Length: 176
Image 1 (tube, helix red, strand yellow):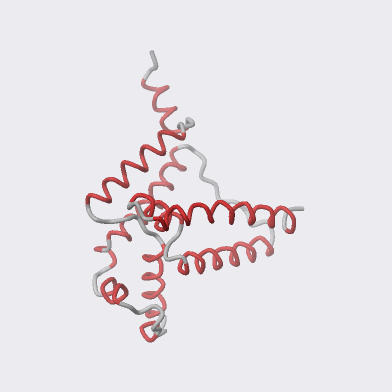
Image 2 (cartoon, one colour):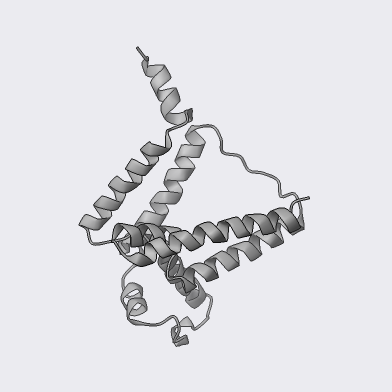
């Protein structure tokens, strides 16, 4: 019989099986589907970028590429009432708590300026690509597949090939 101490050690520091993560994601997507939502990250970060740029004196409301019917609706409500904001902050807080409770949280020293530049370029390219694809792997793939849309499966296939190609490029040109 497993004791209370061993159980909590396994719960916080142990390796959970992959099938459990799959079942948990399926359960969370069922809850979102009940409330007529899909889980999205990039649309909400675009709204936050819009708000920050406006606060800094920019005028993104003049950008016809951004401002459409969805943009109007999301900007008239306070961000705290936006379900995607709550989900995204919950994701970040949950990951932080899990890593901290497991004793794995560390602030690492930046190795070089090259690492920072590559990280910034990679982040910008990923964000730009996610906006062009109308979602990241969470919204476009998981949301698409769970709503039985073919675009989710198409996204998954090309994401796999893109990941393989990106890994080969990084391995060949950037890892010494």
